[in-house]
Image 1 (spheres, rainbow, N blue to C red):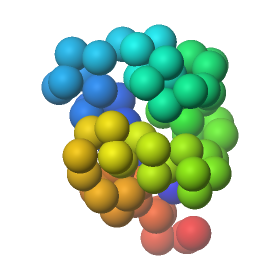
Image 2 (cartoon, rainbow, N blue to C red):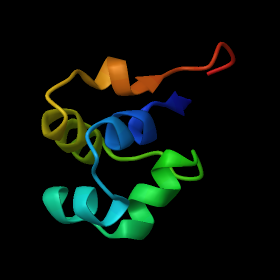
Image 3 (tube, rainbow, N blue to C red):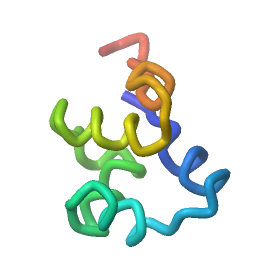
Length: 66
């Protein structure tokens, strides 16, 4: 699975720490999600989407093999 979180975050001028604080997770969680080392829970995915006022589908994209 790929994601566009870093793109949305940078366009909004938000740091990893600011996003983490906004959705009540650690900065490390944001980092590992952005680099696809960690697949977030549905709750975290929904919170990120809500924060950027977008859909989960615009943030996360399944690879062809997923």
